[in-house]
Image (cartoon, rainbow, N blue to C red):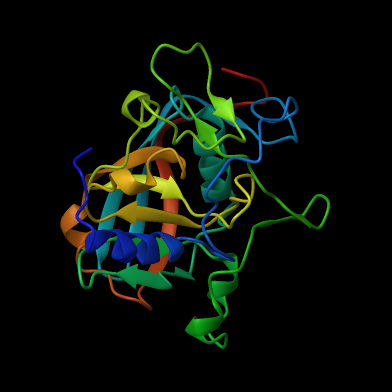
Length: 239
């Protein structure tokens, strides 16, 4: 990526912090774990691709999910869509000024209209099977490697340029807290290319139609419903 000016670096750090649903962005990996990834924790993985339609209060947005480059992250999203976890949720964090950044939503708590919007951003999907939050590991797939890495920030020299799914305008990615393995249901859409987030947050798809709708979304707008319209084959082990 290009060299950032000294004046922009503090600003970009502040913007990056806004992506965290609970706390600040992790600056370093906590290390990989052998029990992370497809086939662990009962989290389904996406085989191939899926097309998801979001019906928002501002219009329809179509997403393409990449199960080849991000099988677990995309599979988690498809599963939550099919469970109705996103229906009626709010876009609780929209950052456009001083420069376009992200539109963030998916906090399950936001279906409650009585909950003040300033309290949103800390919610996870609670698995009804065990009453516990479902958390997924950070997933990064680098060119030249045979499988994704899990639980590792991939922000070292030369790593970001090898990512199969970098942050581009319209990229779909998961929000998380400081722990790389703390993503759950909250997601964001990049309003511009965000190379400063590459390797730190898991991109798993992109907007294919309706980016003009995303550009109109403001804090408090609702995601009325989400549905899988094509593909979406889920498997319990690595595709």
